Amino acid sequence: MSPHDETADPLQPHSHEPNPAPPTDDPNFKLILGNGRSQTITVQDLQQLPVTSVSNCFIVSTGHGTSGPFTFTGTTLLDFVTHFYQESWSELEVVSADGFGNRVFVQELHQPDPAGPILLAYEMNGEALTREQGLVRMIVPSEKDDALRQVKWVGRVKMVGEKRP
Ligand SMILES: Nc1nc2c(c(=O)[nH]1)N[C@H]1C(S)=C(S)[C@@H](COP(=O)(O)O)O[C@H]1N2
Ligand SMILES: [Mo]
Image 1: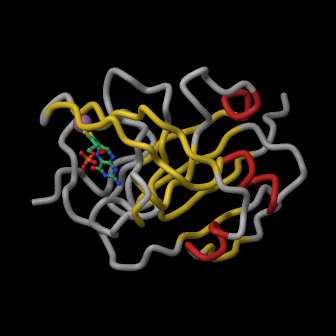
Image 2: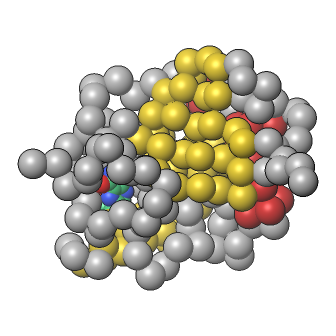
């Protein structure tokens, strides 16, 4: 049985039961821009962008214990989105096809936590992440108490525009 109810909203708080298995074999994902256009992003596309590494990252599973420290390497979410879209947006929805996801706010990217900027990671400790390990994985270095933002197998990054009253 899947640990997540795939009919549930992937952006709502979900269970701590981590899914050990990738939902698909395909590490490519979809970027949905603020203007509604979308494009497929490959790992090779990410590797063309500025490379950032963040050390001393931990994956704090409340059920299975803590693993780390890891050095994750990839592109910052800020470098990624600004490469593809220069208009304003306020939130990103970062979701895996297994129904697990998280919201990231524009302020979090412009004022990164001292622990390090949010990454779309494709390497861990200098080795390419395997699909099983989460390729491509969002890493939120500020998250130290559980792993509910460390989205494995990113399948879709969607920009949500400024909310106008
Ligand atoms: N796509 C996806 N990402 C996920 C999860 C999941 O079920 N699906 N579980 C989260 C939870 S609850 C934990 S504890 C960690 C587990 O990460 P690990 O497999 O690297 O230990 O992944 C997080 N990211
Ligand atoms: Mo977890």
